[in-house]
Image 1 (tube, rainbow, N blue to C red):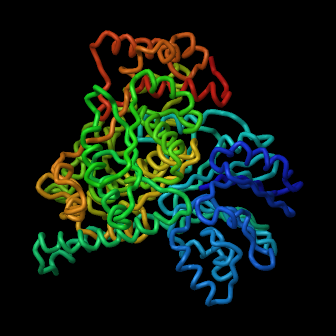
Image 2 (cartoon, rainbow, N blue to C red; image 1 turned 120 degrees about the vertical axis):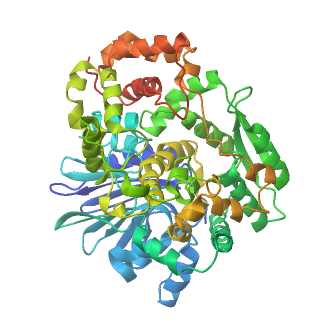
Image 3 (cartoon, helix red, strand yellow; image 1 turned 90 degrees about the horizontal axis):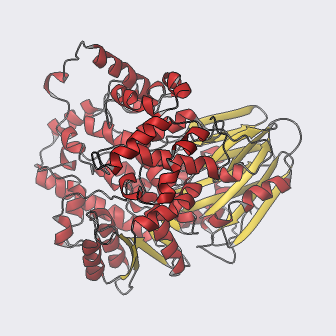
Length: 630
């Protein structure tokens, strides 16, 4: 894992290499092992490396034989060995064992279509000196971040926004549409960020910059079959559900074995995160099977005395698998004290404190000598893991659910069409939620809320939802609105790399993802149990006590828990809220009083924690020196 930075002249003078070097230096936590740079004509590139494969020989930038193609890459190419063999047979010669060196050679063979041959987690910048062409690309699922903006005639890009802010001319302003996304959705959705004028390269997106201009194309997206095709396939089938379930579970298990094996490729120690639930336990079981003689390190968060503590199940799995187990114990004081550091690395306010858990886990990983960890993100979104999937597994309601003529229903349908391209409910009734949060904004912002609210934004490609089964619609929205930029982004990549640790995600291997789209929805949820295919695949690898558990969503401390900290409470004080000018002091104070009095507590899964957003937003404004409106 690494950090990349750069600038490309769209018009005017070439970028100054010193400016790009300053951007890369800001990303030193992503790559503490070495630095590299390149400048030629309209482009300047900077690089910071976290060396996991070929630590001595894999320094970047990479170039092809004659130096006409140059690349810097943040991430891992997990199918690099197969690609390297193919490229060698085609006459290419390599200088290192590093996985990312395949990019320059793939480009020589396939040009911009090189992305179709990659299985990995990556964001790269590649420059073709002959064509004066720059490519910026992010992996299919959005594991690795890449941000860009324009300043002084240059396209400027970096792995984190704090790198962009070191470039002269990059403005610092709050994106109100991004703020409303955080208040309304699980997190931000690419290309939106919390910084006005700064965009995120979307998952599966390729940006091409050359003398003809800037062009963007989506080279991959999660693509489920049409619901009508599923019905035809079911009509033609002869196997009963149990046989079909065994078939798909067996195939998923084999694909996960291959995925885990590929993600253990490292010249430095690898471990895994262990929550005590199905997904992480299955990964641990597959790791144990891949190296029976090896005691892998496992890492967990414990909340001593808390109702959401899972330490017992974590220790049970660690004991059965024979791991070297590490436990981070977290209480309200530690959570409050870590918020500022967390927000600086997340580059966004948050609705939950569990980013703190991820940050502290990666700190323990680094301190113990491990440099990469496997984690279970993606399983819930791809295999029907959230409670809502129970309602979708049976297909659309009989009769299609005749629409109501009430004004509220009409407004809700219109909002959903703007957001998703069709009348599709996700998470909550959006218009009602809009009315609930309107008083939270400062009066001047509340008056214009309808212009920047999430209900006025197009969030996804409607073509990926239209005509799909309800379970697949929910899966697609979870994949795009929850997983890519939130769970993999501010919660995953940013918290791990804050401590120079790489995360790897076996459930997001290309073959696993694409196979999951072909499993019948009726098999995803059976007998009221989510992830039926994964439960069957895990049989014999995961302790029965874990397989029998009902899903237990990961939780952290809420604002209710943290209000006892004077420092946290000060972030919500009328003076701070009024000075910053984005939220209404009276509304925030009323929420504080209601929670302190015990009349209303925040439920970590059922409620939107508005005070957590307000407090972390106050930190966000301070940390990034954003303008105050009060």
